[in-house]
Image (cartoon, rainbow, N blue to C red; front, side, top):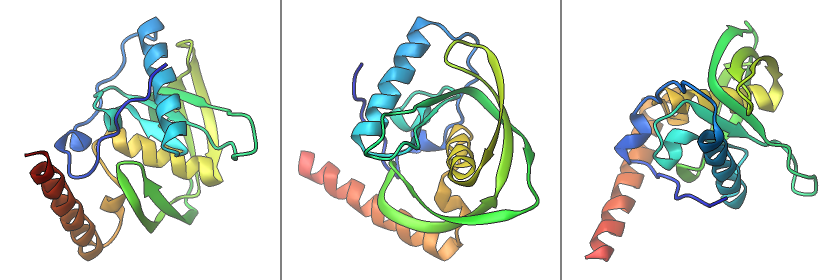
Length: 174
C-alpha cells in the first residue's frame, strides 16, 4: 500500500469525470487499498479516485471513529438510483479543499448500486453521514466539488483563495 498525493483546488483534473471501471481486478484492489491508506493518512472519511489523479469511478469511505478499527467501504461504478424527498444539512469539507467547510443540503437518504471490492453487484440504502459522504464522493466522479452546492459568492471566494495559494506554491518552486 502507498499514500498517494491528493490533488488540491484549482487542479483542473478535479473537474474531469471518472471513467467507468470495466473489471475489478488485483490492480484495482491495490488502487483501492492505496486510496484507503491515503484517506486515513489525510485524515478523511471519503476519497474518490479523481482526487488522486486517477480518472476512474472508484470511491472509498470509512466512517469509523478514531478509537474504532477501520471499516472501509468500497464502491466501484457507484450510481444513485433513488433519493429521498427529505433533505439534511451537513457541514462538509474536502481533502482537495483543505481546511474549508460549508453547510451543504443534500437528500437525507439515497439508494446506490455499485460493485464491491470483489466485483460483485451490490445495492445500499445510505442514510445520515453515509448518505452525505456517498453523494459527496459520487460528485467527485462527475467532476463536481462540494463548493458547487454553495452560493456563487462563497464559491468564487474560496476558489480565488486556492488559486492564489497555488500560484504562491509555484513561485516558491522557482
